[in-house]
Length: 459
Image (spheres, rainbow, N blue to C red):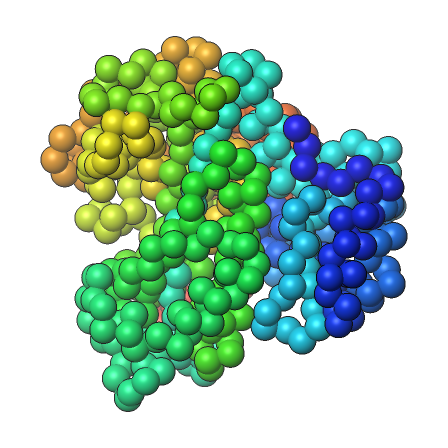
């Protein structure tokens, strides 16, 4: 069922405003194809009308590249006269913004003026795929997202030469690999206190915190949801909270996949399972290999992996993360309690058995990542795909099905997609590929410092 507010439903917004009489402005937050949170800011008296009737938004905003530049080649800018669409609020998403005075926010998705969901809106794309589990299989996707990110020294990061940040409680600066080092989380305690306080105020189920593998790298896990749309809304909101808390404490937080050449990159691991009508985990198993539904889902994820990589790794920087022995997977494979594979069945009780999907970078769009994962699972279940044998030992040393290792190959694989085209639709595939193709051309047209370091005097 759609979570979007239908026309003449401003009562929810009015109730919020009545309970928060000091609120003066409200941010509409919508996530574009590149995973960038964009939107508008409304004055208080505009909020209820926006919930009743939607808010106009130009069609060109659906196809901005990562720099916010139009991509007319998609046909959704001047060819459409840059006509208006509508931002529709998502019920249950209206919360105060703790780091801004007298401000609130809500999540929205884009619909056409006739009420039809816009195909190039990432949230709509996820809803379209997720609904197929209910209609076709009478199952409910269950998901959770864990995000890795880097805290950086703000001045150096903004200068394009990032270094790890100095502790907020002493003069120490992390310099080495120190996975799970509690001193690192202690050193940034004031940042994490604000982060968790703000998450609580916004209803975000932020849970386990760890200091990750590289200096200044952290990870926060969100609780699983039997509503994958909400799980992805919360991932977007968590990114906003993390960046705002970092800013308050004089830091910079980034979700770039690979900001440092010498250290590991940041992933977005997605945990997924399927529930029945009673909420039981259909992947539950003492021995995962004996659960045929789970095995078919893994088979489908493997089959769709190559053509999905443009979604899992959407940017030029994304592909710097994929290195052998880096904890970032380089092949379409699976295993039990094995972090060297792309599809991991984590350790745990039989009733909690699920898939941890590991290829995506922290820079990927959560809605599109979840949609691609569900598409692969649905395909595997309906087509009874065989996952093959699990990897035992070092997955980096095993031969496995190829997945694209660079941006251009990933774009080409998505153009030729067969599985995802059936789930996302040809229009979406053509639009996303065109956007990323143009973005790649723009990115590589500009010489950078490395060009001159390598070639100025040698060629």
